[in-house]
Image (cartoon, rainbow, N blue to C red):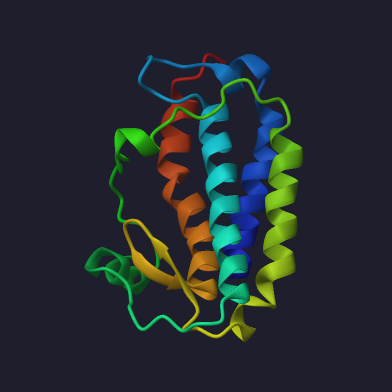
Length: 166
């Protein structure tokens, strides 16, 4: 992971101290996530992506298939396009809005990123796990997706902060 992305994830963690519990749970509208829900989502997805990196390390069969067209585009531009992505309803369970352990959970994400940082490049790049939208990804790609996903949510974070009652 690029140092800038690890810095970004650390800044997400450090900024958690700036919110009161009420601010973390505040929803400006029913259909809009709170900042706490956004963090919960980021943490859950980071672990899912890192789990898939780890799975790649345990595989024994090479996967000849590659990424989807959107997956190729995503990695070519190095991140998600600046659009809101709506997941299918079955994948769109609202994140937890009551978590008070977000800082320690962010620490766990950062710890796992550091543990896997030096390992992912030593895993056969043809050992892949399928992503529903991006196709077949190897350990390095799953790992890099964590930073891309955090970067993707910066705009949402800014929008949510603007609606907070200070």
